[in-house]
Amino acid sequence: MPLHRFLRGLLHHYKAELHHLTPNGILYIVVFIALCEVNLGIEPHFDLWKHFYYATLSKEVKDERLIRHQAVCLGISIRGSRAESYIELKANKSNKGWHNR
Image (cartoon, rainbow, N blue to C red; front, side):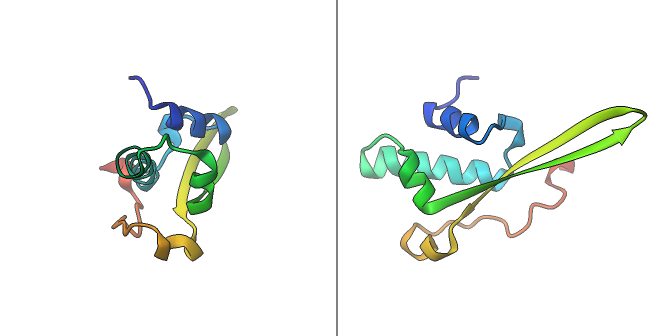
């Protein structure tokens, strides 16, 4: 599936892959791209992205039967101080257990 150029750039910058994104992370990226392209009429810009969002990459290594597994999750959040100047997004407060659904 072809990805938007901005999304590919984000994944490259954070050294993550598409399946590492959380549901809210996908929501934030899609809204940001739409806001830039549709409302502002510009290409999504990484500096503008960093102004409103921050990302955390969490890694967990487990040893099971001498096989090492690495679970990676790229969490994206709106910067608290900038949330008031951004559009209102109704994202889930918790996505705990989302992968089981």
